[in-house]
Length: 180
Image 1 (cartoon, rainbow, N blue to C red):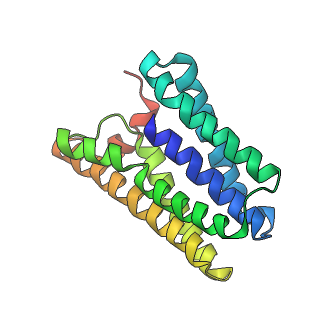
Image 2 (image 1 turned 60 degrees about the vertical axis):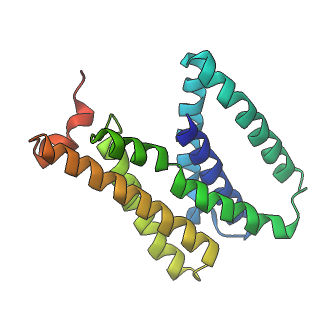
């Protein structure tokens, strides 16, 4: 659940920061869709997760809600936007750290979706280039470089551990379509 809470914070921060900078909606529409994805996952975790998961999620969601309200009411001072986005950059990068560490400790890619990891790598890499093309805001650039790096490590782990088990590349990336 910590991965998805951090991801929800990060993508929402990025969307709000882009909105604050006055960027056109096309510059952050993909981030809004990631925010929706993370919101759905967190909602499912809250609805169907354990009491321990709900205990972790509830304070995080409360803080998240207050933060959204503060943005909507224009209560966030100018200097705080860059600070929030810097935190978002770190959380977007480190949101995958628990999964990366767990994979390393177990010597297995776990059940993280290969498709999600590859799409995260691809989309974050694209965002690096679009950020450079639109003026290279250093905070946004760090956000997307970090996200690309984390998703690249996760993708590499999925491929490496799959190959170690004798699973072919095609089978690794088609595993999302198979049910167990």
